[in-house]
Length: 618
Image (tube, rainbow, N blue to C red; front, side, top):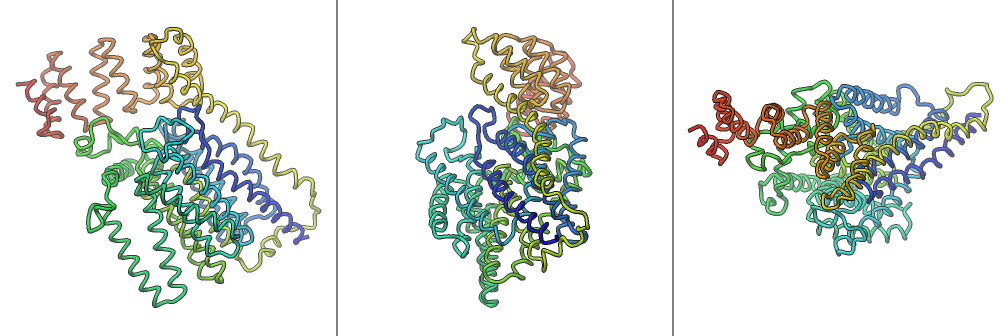
């Protein structure tokens, strides 16, 4: 009976593996040209839908193969569930629950995103073994070949889609050259490491060669240092550890050399040392501002953070005074560009520490597995761990993009799965769960689809609402043109649909209000914007909109109030203080005008704004 149940569990797991890998691949490659955000929102919606079905497989695996107490799997499962619980608590305490749930505009790193990623790592760790791990390599090679080919097509100017793209053309299916380069680097590393494996057939090894060449070309032409960073740090880890395993003395020599190269590379990215001309980009130094702002956010609210994925609403409040002087008063950031800092800053210490702990367990599990395994299995784990480390390297300087992150969580789950399955006796895992009661085979077979359907139905309802919000704003963007008066009524109707949508991003409602204003519905637009700002009074974008409306209405008192509110969420904005100074001066409120001047001279001395402020009161 024990062996029968074990066999059923293994069959269920193997069937679910292909679905798992399909989910990961589909989420990475999907985009929707009829969405306002064609990349991030499309990936989140698909992740939620496909994961809903995967949850049935996951729960069925726990039914057939319960987690044993006091095992590594039990510890990791508790940590992952604790991570979700703490993240959800932070979500509930966020000042804008909807943003915390679905994530900020153009990011979508809210609670639902991480819920989906946790499902991926849990099922991967339960279903992937040395017997089927070759599928991860093969799917990675296939997806990498597709994405690198698309990248080359984009570089050649033959893209079949005319993207509204402020970057260079190589954005792949990720929407940004840095994300695209990082994704190609991760899949390229999987391909390169597969060349050492006997389980990978010749056709896939040939495809790996194509992937490596085409991906490297796309990464270099894209101008993204991020992809090269992933390759570099993953490669030095792989070579160093491989050398140590083959010959300790040679390995120590290679490791020392690699470490020196790594140090020089890091210094180069920080504009120091001989490699600075090759590796330094201004976008690297600007990340220092993002990181320090994130650290300040964490200090301000260490327990639950400033709000899940609410970095963008608080960045101007916590940025350094020198940032706007260097980059401009309206330039902002919606992410810390470091996954670890982002989680600590927005979700608090418990979420941050749990995430760090899970990542450390994956790393040390990989190292232990390499030490314990024979030659072929050692190469399999070394390839996975090196690629996973490459993903972690980019997460230190980049945003947790769902299309890339899903591979990081899959690779982490793969390493854990190999560690779990390397236990002395898998059959013993099930011995303690058996009773004399007969098992109903039909019930077991129906368990997964029934559970999946129960979860899938509300997810589809939610996703349809999400889809409508994205599609509606996309349509509004295309038809809102004052030159076409016949579009006035359709714009009005589409805006009302968006406003009535409970899943619509608050920023989308704000944008729709501006479209409404352009078409002549000025009072209706003002009411909508006021309602949005009432629900999110600390959002600098919405406050800027209030300034626009109050100026248009000639309401000086409300205009002053709006700019005073901006000064609380953007205390280093000398341009805003200058506008306040002018308003105070016009109202003959000289005391407040002098206060505004004093702040300008303090935070922006020697600038044109400071000179203008001095001139006004002289």
